Image (cartoon, rainbow, N blue to C red):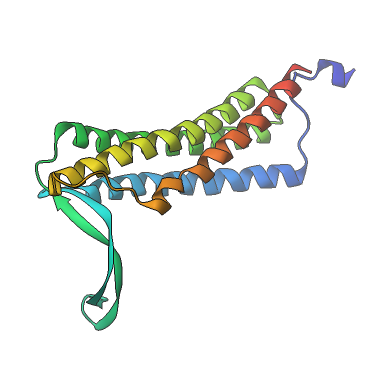
Length: 203
């Protein structure tokens, strides 16, 4: 009789489940604050008063540099360089702005949806419609967000290279080319889990 009157997708939670969900809520709140900080710092590091800053791959070459505000000197090899481009084209600037916006939106969606799922678990709502939608949101944010940010970053990077040297073609950084695929794969895998939760919510 009790099971018959129980809402669909709901059930009693154990002490361990409540502890896990509470931990996720606490950690998620801290991660949300950290994500906002990272978004602000990324924007401040990229959009500077003297132009747009970007890290470009360069041919490996020896360098002498100082660390810890000049307290010690090191010798090594540089494979990347930070460049600042004033007066970047509107298209290139727009691509970089959109990249930051998509990255921030995807991060906030993932964290916010994770917090919602933890809150739903605390209330005993496991295979509920809201939980399924939150999982779907995380899946789409990871998969689509990673792909869109990669495309926009590539366009912005090539616009910066064109501004520095109009005669040079596009630059492709091999590690960066594939760096988005793990995030995309996680999003796809989570989409399959979402399908299972959606089926469970219909039972």
